[in-house]
Amino acid sequence: MKRVVLGVAGASGVAIALRICELLSRLPDVELHLVVSEAGKRTVAHELGPDALDSLTQFARYNYPTNDIGATLASGSFKTAGMIVAPCSMRSLAAIATGLSDNLLTRAADVHLKERRKLILIARETPLHLGHLRNMVAVTEMGATIMPPVPAFYRRPETIADIVTHIAARAIDQLDLGQPPLAVEWGGNA
View (cartoon, helix red, strand yellow):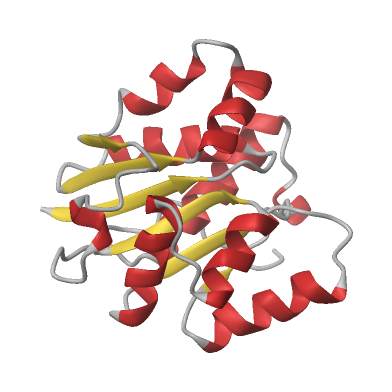
């Protein structure tokens, strides 16, 4: 069983987190561990509806409160295949970049960095100022992957759901879980 951690921070784009949950639930050998920040809960309710948090948590084998810094995710001895933070707010990015492990989401990300495990940050903000960019450089130098949710218009998406699915699939593919790619591979110009 491959353990995957999904952190949901308070940035816009929680539909991506929901789609990641849905796609991971289709993989028979994946165990999803979910932690949603307090700001993330507010964003889920605003963007997806007041009962949408249940939609996220139904896919997770384990769901952790952000103040539970003694949870399994807070230890490097708890082996995982990687972690995705989707969406990753600039507040969470800054905390991760500086090692500020003041909640379970940022502590779990810190553990992934120190244990040299895959950490994918779907950083959600625009425009970016120099502080944002420096934090992105810092986490990249520590081994994380910054993956802004940029639409792949060359795929000619027809719906927002197409865009969300492609971003979610690409993020999961970054974890290299041993399954065929979830994102449709580019076949070149024909």
